[in-house]
Image (cartoon, rainbow, N blue to C red; front, side, top):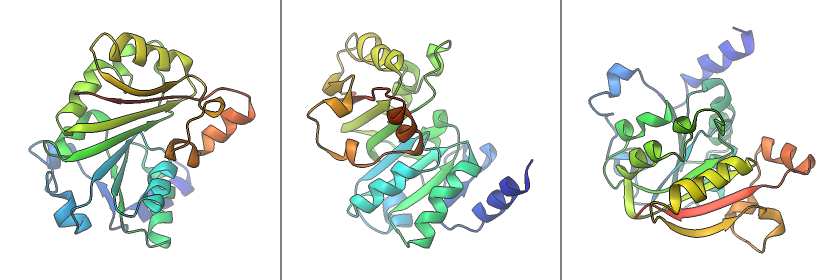
Length: 220
């Protein structure tokens, strides 16, 4: 392991808004489960998750844009999340936190109907393993355990295959409520927070001329 990764892992341990728990410590329920707003954020604002947050650019960007909401980025790659967490600490952004965990354990960390919104930005499309896609029925059933009834999920991806799969094989057949769908976001007339923040990889995809797709939907 490189020295830079080791340094980041060590610094992650010092961040008050970075949570890195062992499975044994959460299998019976994380101590903040169902109590994130009152015990960690110290407010009653809506709780928003970014799943597979990578460097946390969206998590931090949304937290800046919406100080009246609480944001938590989740990813298993601690060295990547270090960037977003360090930025939030340096800039004293108090409505953001990070959890180092596999996404499928989300219901270990959050209580029933605790989450108001989910962002999934540029996940691995898992082209050969549909069951591992973050929008597969398996994962959506997991999210449903922690989402409010009127909660919104956003999917932003450069993968046309993932977009088509999510829309045509998962959402429509299950009668999910699709609020917005476009297979070319920046050629659409959509003007909301989905275009106001761009990740590092999104800028690369755009420079290569790849269209960005977007879905906004509800499970209920």
